[in-house]
Image (cartoon, rainbow, N blue to C red; front, top):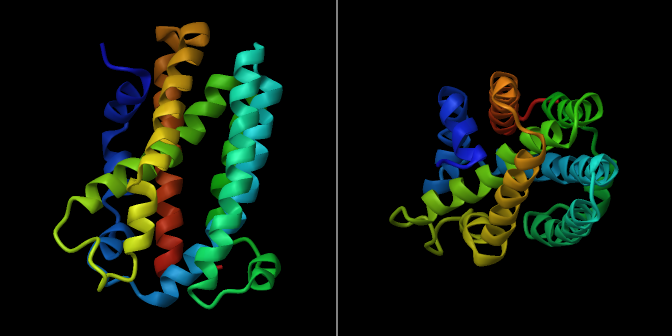
Length: 221
């Protein structure tokens, strides 16, 4: 039987495809993405991670068991650690920590992160997870697909480090744990009557992810 993530992805196939096959992603694969677009994305992704950590902290509050609380608490620590890595990556693109701290959130960043937080505040832990999971698992699946393309990891591709990071064992394990945690939560909270609402939630998250990519291309505030 398909796990919940597969069911959600199949139910929102068009939205998922628009997200994972976005032109921004194609530009990462072949190195044609404009450097300015990537820098803008890096800044906004840093701001995104701040709100993502808050969403995981909300997961601690929404949890019904100590096991769930520990899992989401570990997620907060992992995200905060990832932010340090992000600062180092940004430095390689000429972005200092003060550039990141002083930046204003783009509308696409606000739209997606507040959607995730609102979904968790209004709903239960499963709603929060469904809003979060397209990002977590999506990056893993996107990077795996890109890494398999000829030339994507060549030294000539300026975005090879992004692909390698998310295709690497460490992040793939993060994504696998998120899927397992989603399934465990579904065992406690899912009913078939909820599936249409969860698919719609997942689809909206995918649309907002695609908007986040587009924000990078447009370099829009």
